[in-house]
Structure formats: structure tokens, C-alpha cells
Image (cartoon, rainbow, N blue to C red; front, side):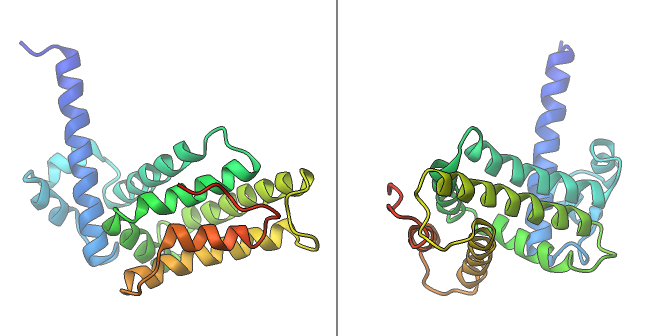
Length: 199
């Protein structure tokens, strides 16, 4: 007989399946054109079954998908500072080369969420500011250690880095031959007195 642990495991597995389906559906059709029914069909359960795990419906699914993506990226950056933090950005880009669907989902949602009425507007607004602040801090730490090229402002360097990363992802999705990790590493190196370790 399955005990509480067995039931919890099944529930966690079902949530993971629903999140995977939501990622796929959102990436394929965008958030606005997607439905909970469509996500339920992908999983092979009823809409009620989806809502049992995500009572907030489609907005709750969107939030969970975004948080899962960010949590994976933040794990890679945990405990890193200065140059090591910047190297972590390269590692994230390298990992995303095998996650086309997830990158496409993020691009679609980030564009949709420029509308202040979009349910993810505040999420993306806060997220971009948080990333910009974290990268700025990393550049400041590099500057304090004498590793930033003379005349470069850490905040300006951070915003350029963010723009470069976002733009490369879009070009990659459009089929351009770009090496996201390599190109971002080259861009970062142009700001530093010594290049980052590769590999």
C-alpha cells in the first residue's frame, strides 16, 4: 500500500509532467494563445487534474515555469563573485544551447510581458532589474580587484552584457550561426584585463 511518501512522490511527478507540458505549449503558441485544456491534453489528464496541482490556473503555471527556469540558472551562479560570476553567465549560455524550447518560451514571454497588463509583466520587470544589479555587482568586484579595463563603468558594462546575451539568444532562435557561449565569453573578455578561463 502506498503511504504518504508514495503519494507525495506521485504528486511531485505529476506536477513535473504538467510543468513540462506547459513549457512545451507556451513555447509553441505563446502564453496568450495557450489554454489549460491544451496543457491537460498533452499530459493526458483533465483540466480539473491540472487545476488540482496548479489551483491558480494558467497564470500559476506561467509563474512556476519561469521560476523553475530561473532557479536552474541561479543554482549555477550560487556562491560566485566577480570573475567567477561572469564565467557562470557563460556556463548558463552553454547549457541553453541544448534547451531551445525553453529559450524560445522565455523569448516569447519576455516580448508578451512588455504589455503592463500581461500577468508576467511585473515578474520580467523585476527579473531584468535583479539580473542587471547582480551583473553590475560582479563587474564592480572585478573593478575593485583591478581586473576591469580602465574607463569602463560597471553598470554600463552590465547593461551591455545583458543586451548582448538577450540579442544573441534571439539571433540563435532565428537560425543565425552563433556560438552563444563563445560569443558571450569574447564580449566579457573585451571588458576585462585578463580573459576568462574557457571550458
